[in-house]
Length: 375
Ligand code: G3I
Figure 1 (cartoon, rainbow, N blue to C red):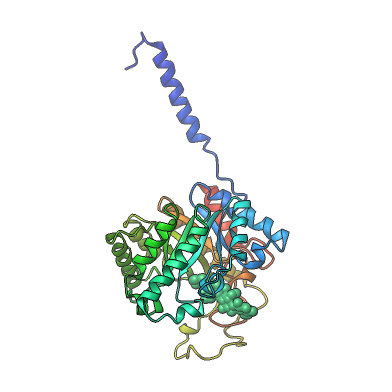
Figure 2 (figure 1 turned 135 degrees about the vertical axis):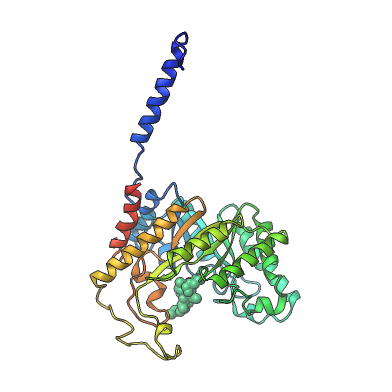
């Protein structure tokens, strides 16, 4: 009951009620003029950059990227074969430009990737024993992470260390150093830059068996005193798989470990997969096959719509779990730049991103932005 002897209390309550109401009715809508603005309060929106983009060869492309994205990943230039091609030689020309690009455009800067069996410097593949491997890891990780200390915000410390059944993949790292190479890598990275966020990054992380492998991997790092801040789910997905339920289960299981979840290489293929063809020999040469490259001159309207609905469903899920998700990065800025035009079959025309080959937003872009307009 309101005390009439205290009129100021009445005024205060009225003001409070009024201001609460105004808050409800005047909640500003998200600025949907770009992806980065629309999702500003939810997570970073990133893209992978190739060399031409890092060197700002085309001002139109630079303007486009800085309008839509607030986070960057290097598509290739930081992989060991490029940055550390010989034992005593590091090539920083492109990586320095990459970091300068991120700073200039005020972006979150991600490092990809320190320890990976692919695009591996040939000399690293020749390492034969644990001492030489320990030496290489220390030199490689401490030098690179140390150089960019305080400037690169997060790292994929280890990439794709797991088989599909969740066991550790056979690699030169496992063969020479043993299973603790992961602990070693994460400890070295944390020592070189204690403030950078450290991720384990991999594909097919929605499959139940691999998910178990990731959970074990994270627990093993944590139990051995290694800092891990997040799981990078690459997100190279299809129109119908993985299911939204499996993606959600992964977000929940990973964040239950106390780490962040990032979607680090998102794209959705719309093309037939040679592995889906019954009886197909995956090594068969499909190059030039019309059946495997059905949309060379443009995406039919119904598939465009399917892609838009798929992206909408995925982002709806991301928004539901925005408190657990740190970043959503697309693997490329537009369709013509995507690696999926050349994998698993060379020379196809794929449509996996939100922008077409002329950087025009596709229906999927508007569906994704509309989710924020509706909030
Ligand atoms: O460097 C050579 C160049 O000298 C040559 O002229 C040119 C001719 O094709 O090839 C260049 O190498 C290419 C390399 O990218 C660097 O541009 C390779 O052919 C090409 O196969 C390679 O593909 C990259 C792929 O990783 C290699 O595994 C893709 O661009 C890159 O998008 C892709 O990214 C990976 C992530 O790092 C990890 N997760 C999976 C993802 C997709 O495979």
